[in-house]
Image 1 (cartoon, helix red, strand yellow):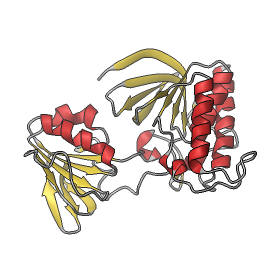
Image 2 (cartoon, rainbow, N blue to C red):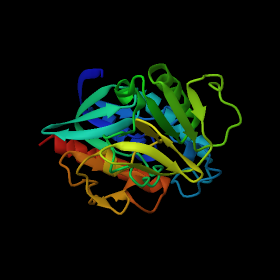
Image 3 (cartoon, one colour):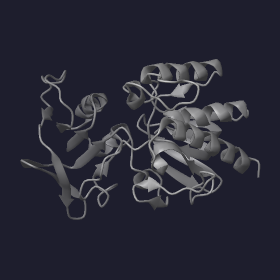
Length: 291
């Protein structure tokens, strides 16, 4: 696994309104940051027909607000590192983050702004995490060389992960949770497409099979690939409020140096609220770094 040598002041996870707002404030405060997420920012914003309560931009369309965010980032020279963090660990005075690319990033503080697109965990998913269940194909594929794996894919982006796994593994059972007629790897003899609905992952000491509504498959490894990871799995020891991250008014979590903002902290799910919390989280991170 490749490790980046740079120790950033702040790592921002997520490129929605909260993450973008945090990055802008931190850049203005001259902090060394890394903004991790999609260069398209957030699909949810881009598809919004009209946003009526964003100050100064009455009845703005989602793609217009998205373009304005990108322009603001570009004007400050803020680059987006297109990578998804799958695990973040507090290690004394810094945080170590592993990502889908196989890279490891390090920062003195972290701002979680990943939104709420993660789904409910499957029965057995948390129980077998690290024991046959993984969120990162690039990271864990070598563990299953010559073996059988199952991939639960939330979006088309994960098709590349399935292709990569087929180069390493004996067999890949690919379970797409999206509608699509044809797949580029339909002629790949190692990848079997299964149209079904996952229900649970079962096993004894380790995960052994994926149970679906209409059948089941036995495999050695199970990759659950989502757009974002549940905060419970993302940061071990993080205190939650239901499915959201528990924060105070400074956007501080229960872990020193770790902040959260936006939809991931709870209702209301509003762009203006997320942007405001991103600003608060950034200023709190600045205060933390100055101690």
